[in-house]
Each structure stands twice: as structure tokens, then as C-alpha cells.
Image (cartoon, rainbow, N blue to C red; front, side, top):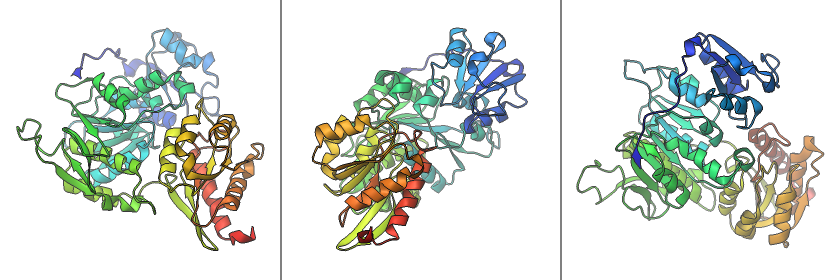
Length: 491
């Protein structure tokens, strides 16, 4: 890691600027509110919002525009964004705007520090764990970013002590000058390649979270791409590379010894000559047991806990508060959540919602949490340019049968046919979008045996047939409860 250079992003005098806000969803509207009274003129652009100033971004006259603030859903090659960049007009994410507008905390303590998380999978869980840990330490913490609450709202709130920020690659693409107190990249696997164009570009955008990091860059020891992003980052002098591992931790790492989560990075002062000896116990696997299932705590949950602990420790949180926060964390909806249990002759069938597994990497981790041959897998959706051969090869042993949903099923059906022809596959007609989840759950229940799990782990985005992964998960849960309310043998 090298010392941070001077920022090269051009200054924008907001008070006299004409700002174009691209997108009027939750993020865009928060941006408009934040800019009120802070800029000379705002033009909003969104074809789906009746109250937008301009529907078609291609019609925006860029000749008098000083800045474009874009929502994460807008692709970099959109004519409005591409045209602005070609004309030398800065394009910022809402995150970049939030960083530049942040206010001092109450009592004149300066702006609240940011602790950030990105990665292909596990971001929401890790940020939730981090938020719980910081709350246990008595901090007034704002859980913001890709989780749904805009960063700019918390950045303008002087009552917030610290921000726990989930950042997507979309948000990071147009983020330039942030300087997080500590940042983590959990993992990097192919995802959103239709948006980014290549895995290299996707990884580079993830790595932006480390730029100007102050205290710690947290990486996954098992994922060399994340370590490479740390090594390539321009950071503040003295910032440390801190790894997390599911094995015994090396120097400057957090890891697992027997059933203990331990810290060999922040257990003593960085200049302590004995820092390479000993470690602090942070928690036990038992402290995470409520986040697991019959097969115990899934490895990715342990990894997320270690990453959250590393960020909290970089912020100065005690080991006792890390444990208290992890014990208090209850997890979120749509992430390996048991939503129904059906009693059948010879045992039970569980229905588990992991709708947030929107790519192959996440679905692989989800399937790995179950015993071999016990999963009826509900899979499919919008593939986003991904392929599924590696996923099927790695996890076919877990699957008893598959129920394929979605309008974009060619890749998953092909991978199942090529690598697991022995697995029965039911294809749900994509034309019947209104009842797709009801029909999928009923088909899956018919394929399940006593002791099995019907698992929604789509490995795909939801926007082809649902508004969001949350709606997809909610409809799965409703259908599962309806099926569980009947005697499955009667179906």
C-alpha cells in the first residue's frame, strides 16, 4: 500500500451549480432533498417518474450543466452519463455527494467516521452485524447505503456518531474522494458483468472502497482478489491490511481457533513489540448459533462476523462489545430464513427463503449449508450475463431436485443438463408471472422427501418477474405457508 496522493476530482461550487439528478427512486429523491438550498438549479431525469423534469436523459442539454449525480441503477454507458463524462462534467454517486456534504457531529467533533463494506455477497449481513456491534458499544450508528437508507441522509445528521455503509459496485463506480475510517471487501466473484463489462472492471470498482482508507483495509484471506485490491490501493499513511480467515489467523488477521473467533490484528497497539504474540477472544461459534440451522453455523456467516468484527475493532470497539453485538444480531429477511415447516409422514419439510442469493456465489454458499441430497432448489431469474456451470458442478450433490423459474432460464437449464442430468428438473412457465411462485413452491413440495428443505436460492436477479428480491422472497414465504398449512400428502 502506498501513501494517498492529492485528490484530483475537480471542485464543484455547488452554490452556483446546475445539477442534474439522474433517477428519482429512493436515492434520487434523497439527493434532491439534500441539494435543496445548496445549489442554484436542479434538473431531475427519470422516465418512470411523472414528476421528473425530463423523462428522456438523451434530451438533457449539457451545455450549462455543472454536475450529474446518478442513482446506482443507471449504467455508465447511458447517453446522459457518457455524454457528461465526454464533456468533462463530473458524475458523482449519491455516496460521493454525501461525503462532500457531510456535517460535523454534535459538540463540534467533526464529521462522523464511515465504516464501509462491499463484496459480491454478504454485504447486508456484515453491515447488520457491524451495526449491532457498534450499538452494543453505545454508538449512535446509521445503517445506510445499498441496504436502502440513503447515505446522504445520515451524512447530514449531526446526531449520528458513525456510519455503517453498505456499498455496491454501482455506487462505487462514481465515488472518488471518500476516505473511510476502515473498509472491507468480502469477496469478488462474477456478477453484474452486463453492467460492468468485465470481471476486471467489476473488481476495480469494488476496490474503490479502499481509496484513502485511514485505519484498516479488511480483506478475505481465502480470496486473493481482495488482497490484490488492498495492495493496489492508495491509502492514508499508516493504514493497515487486515485479513479474516475461517482458519487459524496469521499475523494481522482475525480467524477461528477451535470454536473461538479471535483477533490477532487489534489485540494490542500496532507499535507494541509483542503484538505478534497472543490474541483476543472475540466470540464463540455458540454466539452465532442463532444464525445457523440444523447443520450449524454456515461458514459464510462466520466469515461475515469476522469482517464485521475487524471493522469494529479498527474503530476501537472492545472485544466484549463485539461479542454482545454478534449475540444481539438477529439477521435479516430473505437470507437463509426458515419461513415455514410442513409436517409429513416420516418427518418434516422446511421452506427456506434465501431470495437475496442473487448470484451464483451466494447460491453456492446457501446450498453448502445443507446436507447432501436434501435440497429441492428453486432457482432462476434474470441471469445478468452470468453462467452457472461452476455452481452446478460444485453443489449438485446437495440437490435432490430443481424447480426453475424466471424468463432467462437458458443458462441454468443448460448447466443442470450438462453437469447433473440425474437431477429431476421442473420448469415453471415464465408467461404466468402472477402465479409463478405459488406454482414453483407447489412443484417443489411435491418433489420433497421427509427431512428435505425447499430452498429459494435463485442465483439470479429478480426484476424479470418481481419488483425486487424482497417481493420474490415474500411471495415464496406466502406460498410456502399456504402449502405447509395443508397436509402435503393430500396435494
